[in-house]
Image 1 (cartoon, helix red, strand yellow):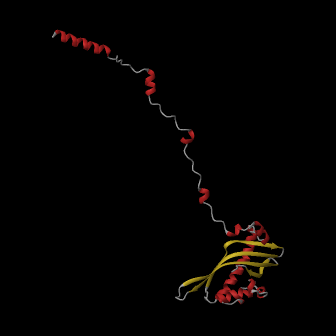
Image 2 (spheres, rainbow, N blue to C red; image 1 turned 135 degrees about the vertical axis):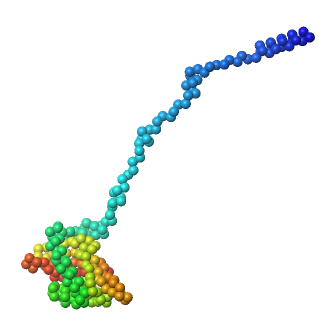
Image 3 (cartoon, helix red, strand yellow; image 1 turned 180 degrees about the vertical axis):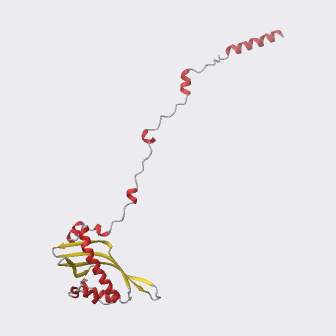
Length: 219
C-alpha cells in the first residue's frame, strides 16, 4: 500500500515538472499605444466651408423683352425711326392725341366727315389696299357693331417713334383701339384691337398737323 502511494506521488511530480511554464505578462506602453483608438483627421477646410448658393435674383427679375426691341439693329436703322427725347415726345404726342380724338368721334358718329373736316388732306390719295388714308373704310366697317364710346391708347403696345426731316415728320404709333358696343343681349362689349400706323406730319407755322396716314398693321 505504501509502495502504491509513493508511485502515485512520483507520477504527479513528473507531470508537474513537464507542464509548460505559464507567465502572466503585464501590457507594455507600446501595447497600450497600439490598442488606443486614434481619431480620424479633421475634414479638409474646403468641405467644412458652408456651400454658397448662386444668387437667383437676376433670374427672377428678368422681364420679357418686348418684340420690337428684338429687331436687328440694321433693320431698326433702315426704318429710320427712333424714340424721341422727352421734349420731342411731348410735341408730337399732342398731335397724335388730337388725331386719335377726331378719329374716335368719326367712328362713334359713323361719319368720316367729322375727321375730314379737321384733316382735309386725308380725303386725297386713298389706297385701302396699302392702308393709306383708309379711315373711311374702317369707319364704315365699325358701324356693324354700332359703337357708342371708345378708348384709344396711343402707346398700348410700344412707345412712339419718330423720324423728323425739316418741315416734315413721320410718327410711328403702335396702339390699342377699342370701341364700346352692346351685344345681342344688350350687354356691354368692346371691339377693336391692335393697330400699327404711321402718321405723316407737316409743319404749318408753329403747328404740326396730319396730312397722310398709313396703316401697317398687316393681316
